Length: 97
Image (cartoon, rainbow, N blue to C red; front, side, top):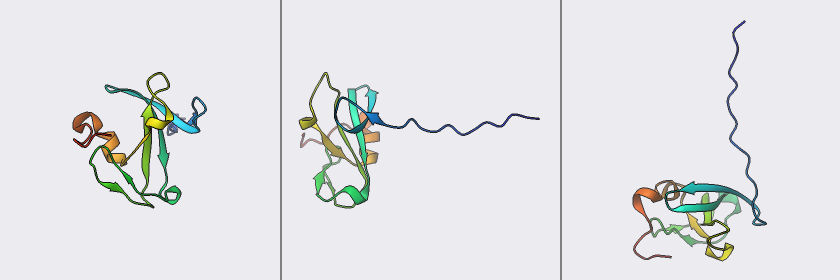
């Protein structure tokens, strides 16, 4: 009987360094702690550093801050998911954070 390949489940985020549920990500721009935020959990308007547009309440997005060795939770920024994924190609907007 042939073997069935089971679909791989993505790794579950785990608490990182006392900052709640965040996942560690590594990229050309360094080490980051990243948390996904559902639209239902957002109540404020944020400005995305990738495109300089607003992230309105109810919009799913990600929160990212430099890894524990390079920053603190006060350095966190809210990004559109697409802007976060393409930050290596686009970089932050000229407004800077």
